[in-house]
Image (tube, rainbow, N blue to C red):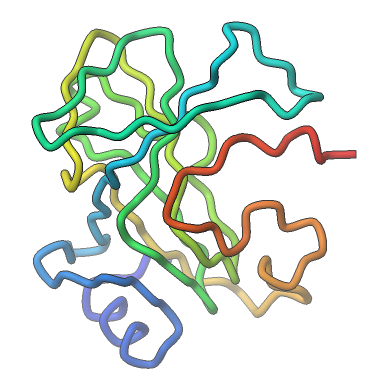
Amino acid sequence: MILTDKTITDEINEGNIVIEPFNSNNLGTNSYDLTLSNTLILYTERVLDVRKKNPSAPMIIPDEGLVLQPGIVYLASTVEYTQTLKHVPVIQGKSSLGRLGLFVHVTAGFGDVGFAGHWTLELLVIQPLKIYPGMKIAQIVYHDISEMPNVSYDKKEDAKYSNQGKDPVASKNYLNK
């Protein structure tokens, strides 16, 4: 079951969902709109290796915007810090941006109970597209769970992306065994 605006608000008030900063104008019928931070990460090598820590460099999105180019993975992050203690958070792209050819995440839209941090987004475009810091970039929905897990994500030893800071986080696939 997906939570509605009323339930999301109730769960925030009870401390089971955290969204900081929270803006009531971003609360939809059954989702919450997340906004784009001003920092991107770009990989600095053309060929990436799944077994290595790939070098990357930060890039700031100026207030006047930045044109994204096809064929490049831009790692971005949300302005909002979220924490989910009793629900499964899922990030979805906004349909208005999808209609402009922007993919907000490739495969990483699913969170775990216990995830805490700013979301890293994988931005890809079909054609050149100008984006701006602070724009609505994605929406988060919350699913009920059948029961509490044995171990929440934030307590797992191999939780590579728990407690992410405000900047995007590059792939840590090289830590997989």
